[in-house]
Image 1 (cartoon, rainbow, N blue to C red):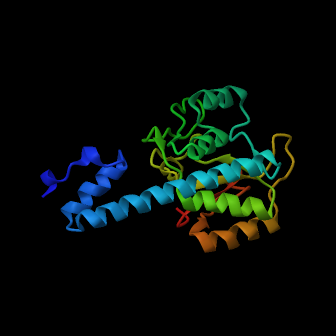
Image 2: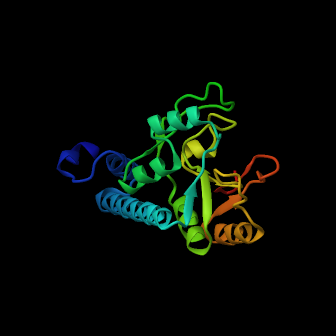
Length: 209
């Protein structure tokens, strides 16, 4: 059945081709395959728009991007990798995968098993909605070094909110945490227990992983 489908004539590429083949194999058929592709494309466009809106929020002073390490050498490496939170969002705004940090030598933690990944739309929606209610600071989305090579960050499923800004001022409050938890419940994002005392940031991820 698959051999009768001329994939080269389809406008969609990459992951969309995979959706088409899988859909046909499981018996959804050509119409169902096109429906899946359209759904995926619509979701991708929404995520692009969300990332663009988040960057606008940052440009308007509602989101600050704070170093996860406070180390200029590591920050420079992240900028080179294109794995800073701002870089991650710029990639998402362009519809591209976001880069992870490639080397964690000297930092502690582990580099990701993936070199790049898409940011989950629920994470983008969480960041955007929270920034509409509160001014926030972000230390990590897909990049930086974490306690496992399979960290939810490297899957595009997490964001870390900073406790202090670059000048050492407190930027996390009870009201921000409450807003984050309330918004998280609505979009499927949860706090996993990491906080200012035990991690230096608040970690929010899909299902609180």
